[in-house]
Amino acid sequence: MSKERPMFYAEPNRRRFSDPLAAALLPPPDETPEDKAIRLKREEDAKKRSDYIDEMIRQEKLERKKNKAEVSVLLLGQSESGKSTTLKQFQLLHSPSAFHAERIAWRAVIYLNLVKSIRRILDALSPEADYEDHDDESLETATVIISSNGRPPSAISSTKVPNYDDYRQRLEPLIELEERLTRLLSCPEEEEPVRLAPNRSNGFNALANGNIFVGNGRPTPTILIPDRNHSQSLPVSPLNGHGSSPTSQPSSQPSPIGSGSSSRSKEVAVHTSTNWKKAFSLGSRSKSPKSAHSGEIEGWWEDPDDPVHALNACAPAMLDLWRDPLVKKRLQEKRLRLEESAGFYLDEISRITAKKYIPTDADILKARLKTMGVVEHTFTIPYGNNKGARWRIYDVGGARNQRHAWAPYFEDVNAIIFLAPISAFDQVLTEDLRVNRLEDSLLLWRAVASNKLLVKVNIVLFLNKCDLLQAKLDAGVRLNQHMVSYGNRPNDYESVSKYFKNKFWTIHYSVSPDKERELYIHFTSVTDTRRTATIIADVRDIIIKGNLRDLRLV
Ligand SMILES: Nc1nc2c(ncn2[C@@H]2O[C@H](COP(=O)(O)OP(=O)(O)OP(=O)(O)O)[C@@H](O)[C@H]2O)c(=O)[nH]1
Ligand SMILES: [Mg+2]
Image (cartoon, protein in one colour):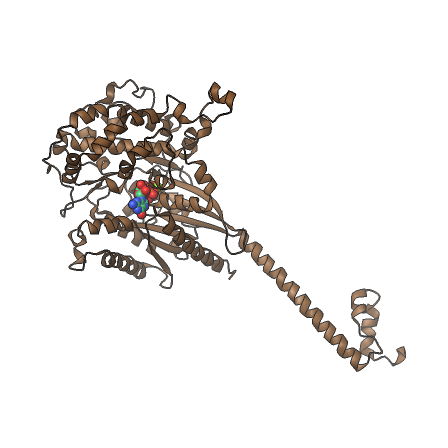
């Protein structure tokens, strides 16, 4: 029989000794056509199974690759555009335990925001304020509506507030409190100049100014607490003349606050590395003998040194001041709109000054800390059935003297979320009172959109502070008085927001090095958690898909 075997069987037969699998797969020599059909069917099924398994393995590899994918997102935009607030929303969604763990610590910032707002009001009420020029510090937290000539109105008020001296006296303890809070938050011994990136030719030089500290690589993350004082131009009043305060800064410390008006007019640097959040968290308080024995949790309200006591004692005076119709009138005359910033807390004085006050999510989202340098946060964000991609979100300082720090992040960033506060059309930059804030946003947007390093980066534009835009237009503020190009179009929210969207879109379209690059535009109010969560989910999908496309995974 073996002799009759055709030649082509000879080779496999020889292989039988070295390759048992090949041998096993050989068709039997006496195979009938029926057997052959059955065998072929069996082999076909086996191949199908094998292909299926191969496909599963390929998918698994793909999934693993996807899971390993890292996404870096840069938050850009001018100062007070809402970058840090957007970051807080990401935290709320994707790192809620870390957000909640820091809840108590935000008390200090909220107290300071409130106290500064009160001081801002008192400064505006002082008779000398009529002759005062608005300097940059005064513009920081309170919106100052600029007149059509681009300058804030100066001495236009006439309403006198008869209780002014009384308010000043009753609120005197807040001066000391402001100093203490600033000191507690700033940890001056750890202060050092912010190192900004080398001055590279990145298209931002024209938009940045001065104060460049050249350092190697990426800058040191720092946060600034904006100071709204403008007391240098004011004669000494009880609220300004706090140099004799027993808690004045010791002269050995590099004074971020200290005595005298000049120290208060400076901004205070707060490094993220100083753990200011820890300093104000529950766990940092030493336990009293009572709590040690009873196991009862001791709250900050039992600590006589906690700032809440001074604040709580001043609450009635703060309430009287904020509710006084003459004060409101005077603020109107001075064209100060405190509701737009830390003034939010003024409507919540009783709740915030309560001894057991715990900041709500909304309070934390409204808390204002100015960022300097670049702060990095990482999250694991799930996508589909994946365990999730590692996201790095960089929150930068948006003030002009911070913009040099952005460029080193351009090279390996996957996406940019650019924030433009469109409610700011009637405001000027703190850094340069000659520059309209919206104009600055448009210039900045042009620089980002045209940047060649960013040609492959997904860009998402948040036209932010839409809630404030709506309120402003409802209050009768006219866009065409600040932007002549708006002409006679209707001054309602729909028309104005559409106009801004077109403006930003046109700039992107005309200057983008890649005309095919998609631009995603959202109208946002990033302090609104529910709506922002939906937008963040959309943005997350866009960025992940874009990232996977770049990795050629989809
Ligand atoms: N009403 C309202 N307030 C907002 C909105 N977005 C931000 N804010 C507030 O505006 C202030 C500034 O926001 P931030 O997020 O600190 O601004 P930023 O862009 O990080 O500013 P820098 O750190 O100076 O670059 C904060 O008090 C926010 O609560 C918004 O959409 N609506
Ligand atoms: Mg910030």
